[in-house]
Length: 426
Image (cartoon, rainbow, N blue to C red):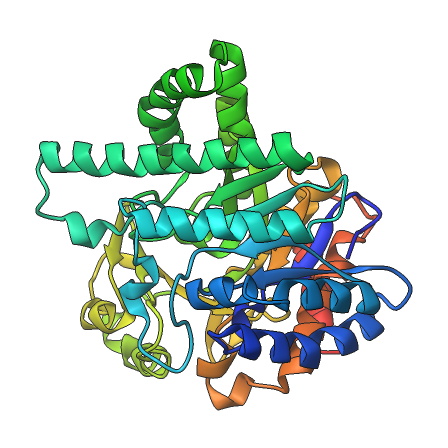
């Protein structure tokens, strides 16, 4: 839905199982009209569409795309952002590091992303920009033994493939006037994990190689080529992921702005966190609470902060639990997209405060146009914090709406947390 502040707010439909177009369309029909009726009865309601590679191909078969467009019009719905990160299956199977396959070293990732861009160009309302979030190039643990030559090859391949997509987006813009950007999504253990790595990648790879390529392929001068890269390759700021990097939103936004990198989409999501007791022998109960979340579907990386500020990463929760009694560890943050509306989970906490800080910053400056709630772990949450899915989605959206529409500009973060706590118990 479009908010008064100029933002488009939705939730990511990757929370609904479905890898075929038929399954995706059925879930959209089931969940979107009732949600729109509750949250935006008199105005258009936006969709954050997730299509697997298979579903994207099937949507372009026969009359499927035209039928979808007719349904969107009849229901007063519109698509403005897509999730192009998970390529294959995302539910009812072990996903783990397969979520990064195929990575940006492959032609398959290029073809899939360009296909999504062409679909979005058909669906995107006139005068509105569209975005597609994508993987952070590749997955670091696959490259632990790579030497400098191999790493240069990986970065070169990823960069050339992304620039190939930029050229396709420029063609779409020239042909039908639709502005679409690819939003690179840093996450723990991704080849790009944080703002410093993103900025370094732009400076060392994207801009030098991209400017030369677009000068040759498009006839651009230096300034035009640079602007095309910044316009069509942006950042997906997943709040959970940046909280795991222990980056404060205000500092990350400032660094990215200084570097000229645009934020195409903010995914509103929260990670699990906990302060570790000083007495390491009392951490057994904490380990039991975390163990209930060590499920086999998704990666749940853990980033540990020590008493001297050093960060240690574990590739998954099961590995981290072996180190929970580490004496100088003081805090854990875990990649588990928990609901936004509460900051307490069976003795554990969340990084809800980071989401609140982001929404507070958005009231002062339009950092992006696209906001997407991305709580996708409903299926694997412990039973005691599960609720009916439609009600859960609505509750997440209502929490965001109340937070971003709050006109009190007070800087006191404790009062913000108090309001969030109040919402969570209504």
